[in-house]
Length: 379
Image (tube, rainbow, N blue to C red):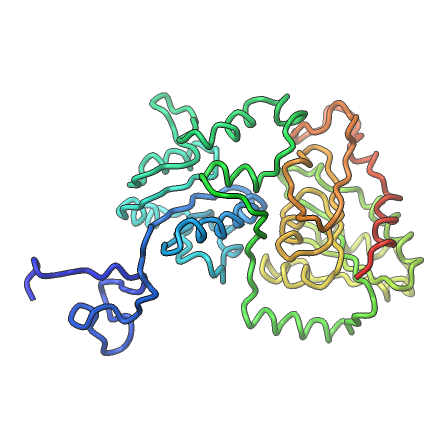
C-alpha cells in the first residue's frame, strides 16, 4: 500500500498503532464497528472546582441529542478526573498536562466548549483547533471575553454583583446549556459507579447492618478549605443530630473528606456510647470515589454548598442544602429537596473567603427547619 492510498478510518477505536481487535486489518477490511463512527468531534473544557465539573455533566445529555453521532473529549484538572470515570457519555477524559494539551491542540475539532472563566482555560481555548468555539476565550489584551452570543448572560453575571446576587433566578445548569447552545431539559448529573464499587457498597451495607426500614440521614459536614465558611459549626451539627436522635426511625451517617476527619470524630464523640449506636461515622480518608460510595448510603443528605452537595445531587438524594456566602439560585435540586438561606440578609451572598462581619449567614441557619424537614420526609 502506498502513502497516497492510505485511508484512515473515521472510527473511535482506530489508534493507528495496533489493530482495534486481534488480527483484524481495518485498512484492508474496513471498519469493524459501524457504531463507532467519530461523527462530530467535541472538546469540553471544565477544569476548576470539583462541584463545577460535576455540575457541568448534564450538558452531555443535550450534546448527544443535538449530535447523535459524535465523539466527546473532556479535559479537566487531575483532582477532578475521578469524577468523570465510567461516564458512558464521554469517549475520553484528558487531564490537564503538557502532553495532553499538546495532543488536543493537534486534533481538529468541530466544537470546543469552554465552561471556565479562567485565564489558563481561556488561553487554551484560543489555541485549540476548532471550527466553532463556545464559552470563553481571551482577547488580544489577555482579558476574558465571551466567545459566542449564548455566553453573554453568563459573562455579565460574573461581572455584575447586582445581577448575580440579587436578580438572577436561573440555575448554573440552565446557564451552561445556553453558553454551549444546547437545549436545557433538566437532565440529571452524570456520575456512574463501577461494578467493583457497587460490590463495595453492598458489602459496606452488610458491615453496618443496613436496614431499609430506617431512614438514613447523611451529614456532609465539611467543605473545601478554599471557602471554610461554607460549613456549619460542630455545635450546630451536634444540636441537629441530638434532636434527630429522638426519632427512632432514623440513623445518622457522617460524611466528609480527609479534611473533615477530626471534625467528624469530634461530632461523634459529643454523644454517649448508646447514642453512637445510631451514628455511622464513614471513613473519610479513602478518596473521592470511596467517598461517593459512602454518600450512596443515606436517603437524605444535609449539606452546605460544596462538592458533597453536588455529589448528593448526582446520586439523586433528597437534599437539605443551606446557603450563606454562595448563590442558592444557581443550584438545581431537580425537585428533590429544600434550599435554606437568609433572603433578607444584606451581605448574603457575598462569595468572600473571610467574613468581615459575624458570620450571620451561618449562625442564622434554621436548625429547627432542618429537623422538621427530616422528620417529615417519607421514602
